[in-house]
Length: 257
Image (cartoon, rainbow, N blue to C red; front, side):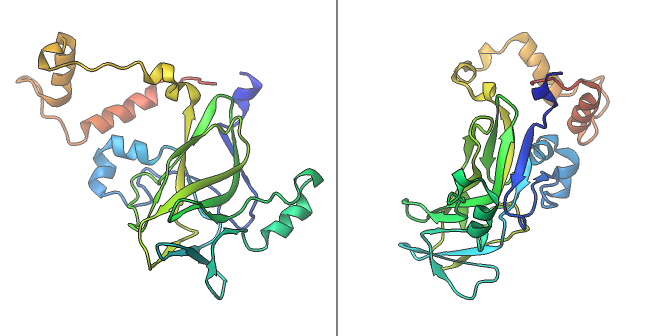
């Protein structure tokens, strides 16, 4: 095993000490999946558990009037116009702790972007992944959206780019306070090997034109997935989920480095 392979897949560095640490994502999507989906739908539970929940370092609220954005936070006594704002008290703490060459470069906590109703929010973290691994930043999987904002998705090559782990958010409601709770995931970070989103891989696809193009093997696989022969016993509910879990227990985990 190489030194790189002995490293964790991702290492999160917490800069804001009061920030909640990332957590492994939950197969039950924080308890919000319907019970039937949790018991029988392996596709949903696997997707829900893929990655880590990342939380805002403090509860805060935004208000967009269609033109400007105001913000407030847990412990503040007023709303403030939002341009670029530091986490309360963090800038001075950062400068006291860091090397001289990076003093004055504390990451902003929340900033209004040029696009209307769009803000950037920092998690209070840095992240570094193994070589050739990146992080997909996306909305928390299978957790209902609040209806007042959308999280943009982005892939960050965190093996090469070592900086603030943030997300961009588009506000979708005006003239109402939009609250972000420090105990509710702001986004989900998912590991991706760089090879899987390369053009060489993604350009390697094809589409068949119709029913006649499927092979005998294709139809046999389809039959085993969705049909039942006359001599077969009835399949229990959730049989596919049971097969996937059994296969995972017996198959070795591939080493991607």
